[in-house]
Length: 102
Image (cartoon, rainbow, N blue to C red; front, top):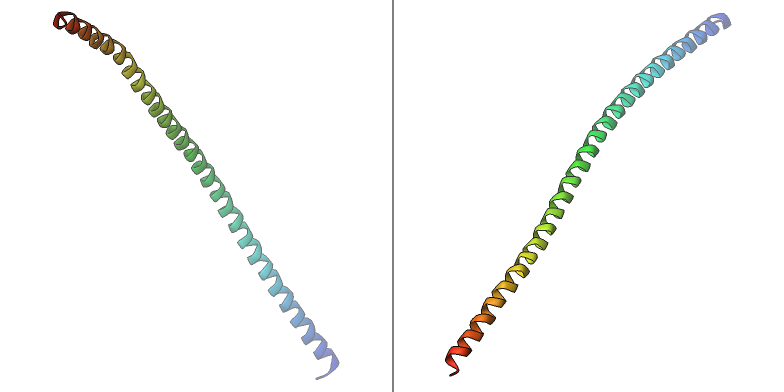
């Protein structure tokens, strides 16, 4: 093989390698774009899920607050009933002692 043929062969191999590198670069760019698109979709999905989680937490907080209010209301009702019942029992005790102590 003479020098010119070897040089031409060498240059042809260089061009093939450069073309292969261009193909690899194109594939990498395509994959990068696909990854970016997937990440954008994931971000949007995560945003929606975070909004839903926030709403669920608000609802659970509201339920907990209602339970606490109901608990307080029950004790207030018991207190309001205990005073008249205590009065009636006291009055009945006084009347029983008055009539049966003689």
